[in-house]
Length: 256
Image (cartoon, rainbow, N blue to C red):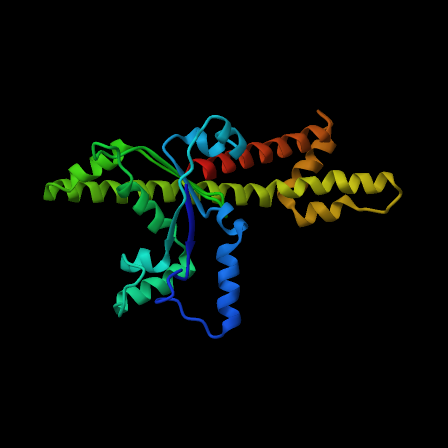
């Protein structure tokens, strides 16, 4: 289980404060139990461990290992490194915007191995955003083997690019569908609301809704004119379609 990725080093030789109060506040922050009880990232080789509460993990005698890494350690490889390069300074600046997710994932994937030096399955969770990432040892082994030959590397890059385009296509398509459905069928809920206001004695003219949303108003007038089936069937059908497509949208977001 990884602890916080601190943006300032705990070493006195690489940490500078503007005043004594700032130094005291920083020391109080790092000395408080609350700071160390709330890790920034959690890692486990079994996914089920990330879903269990801390009391349950302690009851099963699961060991916790807190690893604290500073920004200097992640960028320089050393907390006391001096004279960082321009690229390192730029990386430290960008990490304040984009966060540590990619850096931590790479460190864990390639750094934590079995006693034989082989890769392991891993599950990582950001405790602040609640995002989760998963990788398998087979995927890492394949990645290393694909780097041995030039054509294998080219094929691997092409496959990654192809899968990225496919995922982008599905995500944008599903998003476009849900936006269209919300625009066309989402306003259907206004018709029963206006009917409810009419039953309460308010003067509401449904023709206003027919002109504002002609793709629904025309069908509503035809249904009332023909009298083949109640209007509520038409409303229920649109609301059901809206619910189904929104469920599909959320499922796609969770999958991709």
